[in-house]
Amino acid sequence: MSNNFMETLSAKSVEELKAERLELRKAQFNLRMQKATGQLEKPHQFKATRKQIAQINTVLAQKAGE
Image 1 (cartoon, rainbow, N blue to C red):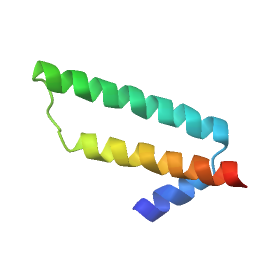
Image 2: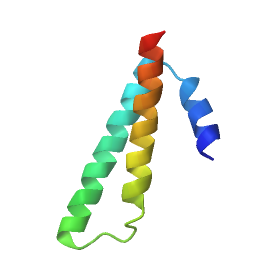
Image 3: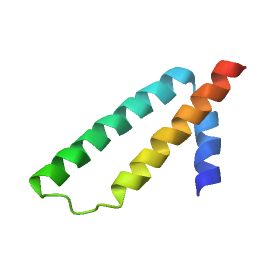
Image 4: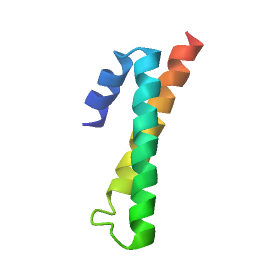
């Protein structure tokens, strides 16, 4: 799954990647708020969201180096 996700990210433009990263950061914030209020039902989403943000950052760094 990860490799396919990376290929999908590589096909996107820098603007699309930045927009997706912003959405993921908002989702990460919402997860933190749910955890703080005791409403978090799926704690595994923390790791998945963090990983997706890191993958987007990697692709952005690769595109900046080109």
